[in-house]
Image (tube, rainbow, N blue to C red; front, side, top):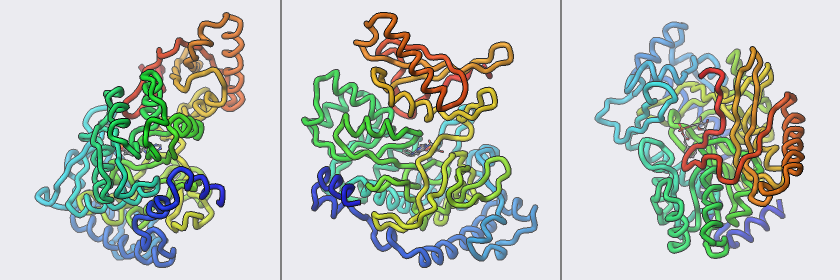
Length: 453
Ligand code: DLL
């Protein structure tokens, strides 16, 4: 811990670290017994509210003979039915709203891969709560009223842009609402405006660092100190890469539109898990197959119940995200809110290759450990003669690409062996030219599953 503090001080400066520490100390460091009382009170309120105001929930409760009064404490949570993404789709666009539209002041939507988007709404109070959790999250990576926050998450229906924006304004920082894209301009602004914090997807942060190199801009010419990256899974190796290339502390922020947007959970500078803001969101881990609650420490699907949302309360929302609750309570940062591990991926992104479960993040982790490769890759899945095949395309650096064939073949073999050790299945590896793999301004797409095409 002493090392960590020293490290954080070296990046932020002692005074700033102190200022950056908590946004809302009373809540962030609330004793757990007190937090539990608050959660139970809010859970009871939420359950009555949805029963009274959302026919979908009233029917779901009635079907299993559950009355709001049956939910007294957190132990009763498991009696409640789950909510799925399909329930939002079936009630498109506003069917799950618990308030009249006249009270809704903002609507966002997440584009699904198929059909209609998932629509979410916010009352004025919801926007306040969201700004609060985002202000806490940004403070974790050092934001304060003197910060200049370059917000390169997309503005629009996506919750990333405006979610960060309102949190940053609440802190009193100067927000630079640049949104995603126009990478050269991003670097110019970062340098000229003296941005101190960058917010975007981790894959875009990596891309920006490449563009910096192309433009001949070194990290020493920038004032960046911290970054809050999320909206997609990213490996620890990618974090190291971003931290080294940009000279910052890079923290992970998690969230999803159905629950609120970014700011559901965030890493503190200790980097040992993401604190879920438990006064607003109640977390459980369940077995994705059976829906049974799993004990702290076991990996499973994260399920979230909102405790303060007015427009769109969610009861036991199945996020499809895989993580675990970190069993050790308390964190050396002083925050008492429970931590989840970095997200491994989504149940629906998990590839099942010849019966073996594969997360793209596992492949990323391996690739980053091998020198001479670039951190860009694509995964292709095919089915030939009833057999699944996985092929990984990996970009290599200019020098390697112009090397003799023998060296390339040996690198290809090395990567194949390393991936096979981790996944336990045979894979094919293809080395490709520098810059031939697509770059992303928002969420990246690194898997092309051609089995279902
Ligand atoms: O991605 C909200 C967000 C914006 C989070 C900016 C963080 C930063 P959706 O578009 O609804 O909302 O997508 C939510 O993205 O269920 C996860 O699968 C994935 N995701 C979000 N954050 C992380 C993360 C926003 N830190 C879906 N690590 C979620 C891994 C993440 N996956």
